[in-house]
Image (cartoon, rainbow, N blue to C red; front, side, top):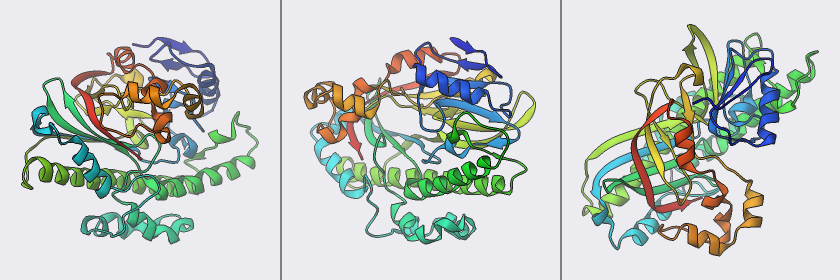
Length: 390
């Protein structure tokens, strides 16, 4: 339920009491902009972010902010429920992790060979329409289609409360998405520098529907969102193949459920009887009956949810647990021993390279879920037994 309402030029409706001062200041700046429609909705995983607050749902009839969408356009989640059970995994997690890490590039890496599906993706036919400033990046984009990335991106094998095996994956639009975002963020700042209206933060620079750059940005964003969606699908197919080899003698197996959703993107939707551009900066669409994914951390639960279509949140929910401390602060506070303890039941890396992703750096996912009981209902609760980090 709505826990907090900040009164600014337009209201800021927040679904939690757990919000730091820096995020509040960002939200107040956001709410002071002249084009916000109705109110800003803020999900319970809210925390400070570069550009705009993570967990913010920003509606407008006349403008979009490239930095609010961010540099990982189309970042999101994919979940697959298999017909396997926990007993099928016994003694095999180490080998499965090795196979996944062999078959899916992580960090800054791309694929050494561009496979059939990545090469024949329909989106390449539209690459020439993107901003000309990324025209030399097609080969790298092709190589990275089907790769994880770094930071908080991950691949997990999970069990639900009935011991069914799930695949869970978090990734986005890789280097091409960042490059496209950087071009438009820079252009928005350049345009705003010429305007009489002064914005409270340069990262809130925006395009209006009257700007020719508006259509160009939306075109590029839509392409990146499709790229990110396909990126997740290709990786999931490779993981399915790993499980087939390791658990099913190489034979295909039934897929019982599949969900793929964005949480950093722009969509043109109807709310309160009007068409508006909705930017979800770390938030998931949660229309009535719509399935979504809300992950925790690399040592805590994740949730498959069904939207309740709450109009006050612009039919949205959180995109995860949300950080409660920065990466730098996490590395300063926690040790590798802490990481091993907090992930003791998970087959995963336990070295300093992933210390900033330690579960203790995140909010309590169960409290986050409780705070949004009017936004979603839980369809499945998952707990990872294996995690691959970028």
